Image (cartoon, rainbow, N blue to C red; front, top):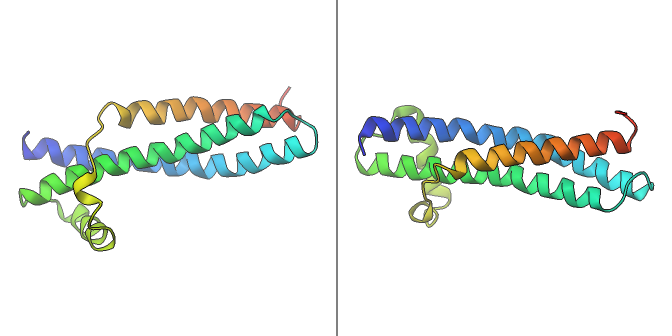
Length: 137
């Protein structure tokens, strides 16, 4: 695969990671609100399961794109074509967890599917928590 394609992939996956971060920042307070809703008998225990699922998928969204970004960075580093804006991140990752770099893989389909499913799950969880607390009809 040409270097330019790997560079584009590394940048795209690096940006897609932030979707997972944003989803996680929404999912955690939603999970706390779901637990509170169940504790106060505003909802059934299934609400916690839906909220946990959404929280897990938000983490999966980050993780899938992080692995794919690191895989692309590793390939670029082997070719001595790693852009300067990604070199510092790659060096820090290699320093912190050197055993992880050889195990990461490119997940082109999952990098889109997991955030999409996380979006649906989080939307459902947010809606269900909002209705449990009577914020929506």
